[in-house]
Image (cartoon, rainbow, N blue to C red; front, side):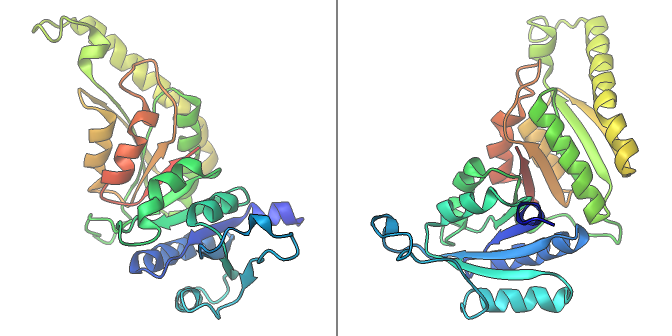
Length: 290
């Protein structure tokens, strides 16, 4: 396998010494093992501006577990997955810049949501917006496990970005051995006109819209369901915004998947406009796909 192909199979985790980053690395280790990927633990140490130095003089990435921040994390991941290809890398670069650069060569970037006190936690939104691969923002899911895998939930509209999110959701659900819940949310007033707000409803139009949305969802989902063979359900939720609907579903999910941009024919079904809302307020990990 050539170097570029090998890099495309890397899962990169940002490590800052926090408990959240350790938990994110544990999740990433499980995912990497399930997808036959290498795991890269990346610790960025901001320092002097090295741009005035020659290339030969500039500090280069170092590998190994001598770093006191990376060592315990690598040990924990290796204990859980002895056969996993784990690499620890320390770079002298800003956190945002290091993770953005790493995202150019990764299949998935994983960061802990953390808090503003954590080095990575204060950079999550910026990292997610600048990354060039899907980003998994890890946080502890509030849903109680009952012995069965919690579902992966993906919100879709009719955009190309949403199609990519749907594909990533099927891939992720398969890797996690989890059922997939495909959902589409829309608000009635923009869909059926001013009559709704005045207490009037064109029920025939409403039924037609619901039928059309269900058909479009089925057309998107059917080919992927056949390809991945993942257990799934599709649902249309009416009179609820995508942001609120996905936040509500996050309480019973192990992962929410959203697209980073995109807009559907119904203006309020714009996943790009809610991705940041879901990213900051969901009650489980969030995968943002671009």
